[in-house]
Length: 82
Image (cartoon, rainbow, N blue to C red; front, side, top):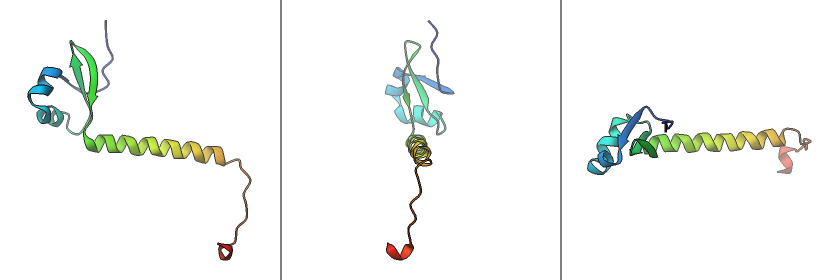
C-alpha cells in the first residue's frame, strides 16, 4: 500500500537509533520522515523548524480572531481616558 511521505528526506528507525544527530543533520534544517517497514512512522523536526511552525500556527489563530472581530462595532476611546 502506498504512503504519502511529507518530507524530502527519509531515514529508517534503525538509522535514527544508530546516530540520531546524523539523521537530523541530513535534513539540513527540514523535517525528516522516519520510516518503519517503509511506511512513515513519525517526522523528526529540528527545533528551529518546530519553532517556525508554532509561529505560523499562532499567526493563523490571531488572523482568525482578527477576522471574527472585524465586524464588531468600534468603540471610540480617548488616550487621556486610559
